[in-house]
Image (cartoon, rainbow, N blue to C red; front, side):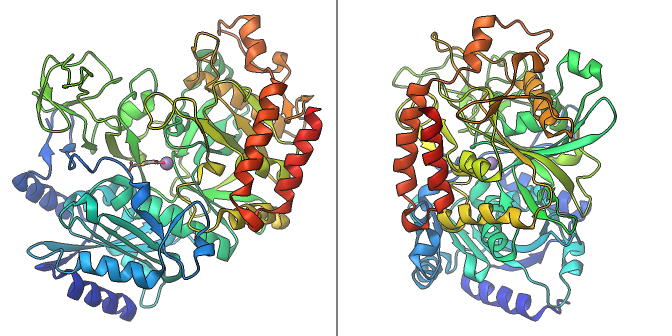
Length: 591
Ligand code: O2Y
Ligand code: MN
């Protein structure tokens, strides 16, 4: 019997709106999971995979028009437009509720509404947040079961009066024309309708843990960031922790699960994974920055993941994993482009059609077996490199923050910001260039401050100000770095091998955070390594390539200054003066 009056009242209201046939409270038990899976196997919502080869694994296909987050249909609904800022779609709350209510009305008729109590962060941690997601999708329940902590123990933690984020989701008719992902930060509410996929519907993830949480974080004085968290155990047994923000699809999951190259492994380095996507950070009473991963699982991109690019991920997904939109093999196992092994001679593609390698569409393009954004949902605990501190209520102390982008020419492999304010400038001006696989013009620069452009729940000018102020409470600030694993040579080939070898750069980064810090060169853009301070043993890179990886092309940087100036104009009066003066200082240093 639920005693939380506000929760009870809200569920009654939402039930009246969506009119489900039944309401079921999710407890989080194993028996409940089996029952839901069984039901979904019967309707075809899920397909059971070969339980000998892939124990506990299931397969799901989404609607063909529902394969990724839909930024265009994602809104921040604050009373004042200026509170959402120029980088978000905005709708006033009364209009958004009215519009969405028309779509939600009766949307769960003849369906069951599942009530999922979930905790972002370890249950009971003072830094965790509780949400309640109402959904008509078993697929969502089973994903939330992996990605968050769910069930009775969360309700117990919530008690009779605890705060919670009200999350309402309905697949409705999966009609893209009526799809809406609405955030009401002032009401601590999220409404999502007419989608059944990923970031649109696992409301604990991007919607709560980033958009709503960033708003709460500003109000409460902490940071909700699109960052991986990693522990690096050094030869002396000490573990230092770092966070890193890269735009979507820049290899956060691979870096979070990195296996050091042989030479560094022999030295005694070891990596501990905390999280691959989101970090909540706050300054503690010791004046240091601490972080938790609010999630409990990985929702990773399948294509390109294999035993060479990410052995730990491949180990993680051997059991208890949900595969979405990958290729289904005839033996009820799965495959994807860039995965392990050769493509099967035949199978069923992500759309449900018979598939053979080399098949072409009507325009002569190769038909992929797996959708490029196909995913695995897997429990973090199954990762061989998972840190014992994943469930620690206090999280880990952060020594360095890394920002990064995908830049073909301009950004060197690594540089360090001069100080906190300069570091915020480096994060605020982060950018990536579009690859052939993405929409838009090839090479077009997309600014993505702190990788938060699609995820900041309020005005980004205020967000920069918040970052600039957070160090006031800090006694020991983490150092800030920028990396670019993606520099190209004249032939368009990557110059840096990336993946495991990124550990060599992380080793230098940590050496800069040490009390006996390694000397570095002062350049117009920041401190850069002396080549002799990076362990390059076992790597075959020519002197020329190394030189190019660290080269600063002043002509390109001048152009960058102009480009940043234009970008900064977007934020109008809300652009903090500190960022303007950092831009002017950069221009001056380039002279
Ligand atoms: O397309 C989606 O719905 C998933 S997007 C996603 C999933 C996991 C981690 N990060 C992201 C992202 O877009 O940043
Ligand atoms: Mn992400």
